[in-house]
Length: 62
View 1 (cartoon, rainbow, N blue to C red):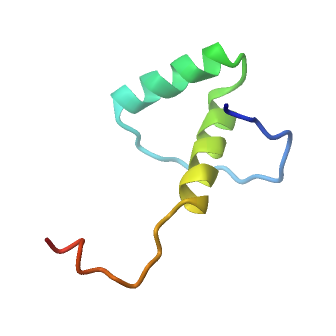
View 2 (cartoon, rainbow, N blue to C red; view 1 turned 135 degrees about the vertical axis):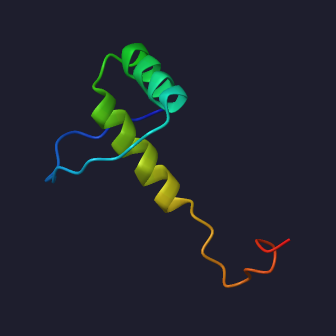
C-alpha cells in the first residue's frame, strides 16, 4: 500500500514527463486524495531506494 509522507524541505525543478505517466500519476493522486507532487516524490524515493547499483553492467549491454 502506498504510504505518503508529510511535509519536507523542497526545491523547485522542471521535468518533462510523458503524458501517459502524468495521467497515471494524476489518477493515483485522485485515488489517494493527495497531490500529484506527493505521489511523484513517493515514487521517486521508492525508485531510488530500490535502484540496482551493482557494478555488473554486462547485462545492460546485451
